[in-house]
Image (cartoon, rainbow, N blue to C red; front, side, top):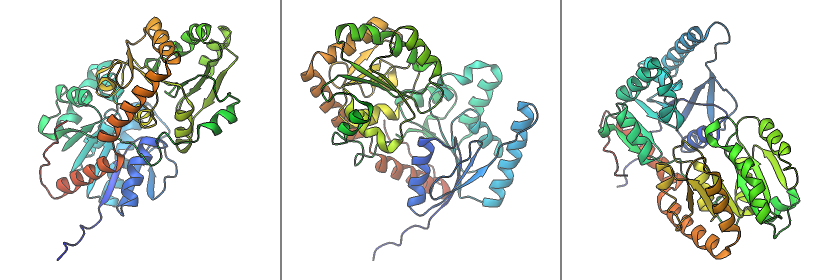
Length: 378
């Protein structure tokens, strides 16, 4: 006889609301039939998810944080979830830890491990406590999981789990022509695409702008598309205008996720050049679309981009190296085709969204049953 399907779970999440990473993760579990709740200070509608606002709008920051923690505890007592999953170590991770709820799983994102804990002794102590006491910790690269372990996360409770890519959507067959038509870019003009957010200096959007003139000196018909899911591009626009970069530079703001494959396929070169980062989902999505990628040689990116094989690597903040990599691509269609095909092969073998979410579902059930999951080898 076929074993009965396990019952659905009631899951509570503490995470950044109105963010595509949160939405993709939570809605996957909602579609699987689980009851999903999101506790957040950035509330907004999310399909299949009950969203709870834990914002406190008055008083100094420590007071607001404490009041929001009381809200978290009350909501968890009312919801009575089978498991609490916190996304982002600092801020939300502190609430998850101080809530005292168990089982508690923690997923780190990037600068919450690499940057914020080292801004003060208090933040470092809180980060170490949250990592040490979580029942399980996941991150999206070997490097970031190693960083968590160095901060106190027990290795036997730490694992690499990818956000993953939907290969039915992100592939080389997306409608590039529609994007070029919309922006007025000729079908044969080179396009350099940057999609990293405008919020943090370490994404190095200023370097994208500052090197565009040098690229266009060699390839004058090159178009730049500069997007960002978060933040304001006004300062970067002003920087470009001051440098005389008004022609063939397209500032498109936030690209809806459903439209992103078309932009990736419309690009000749895709840039992801931060100074600090975990595995960027945008990098994996670009790989799935066979993009010719320039990435900084961070350990997390180097797990995917092998120089000259699946992309080109540059050192963070190396303007000359960035110009050289971009122009090398623009002058070599065979190189673009070869590294794009290899990139797609690598990402398809390692980053399927459904497979990684199924792994998370398994971890949930193990933790809810009181068992200790065995981390998969990276």
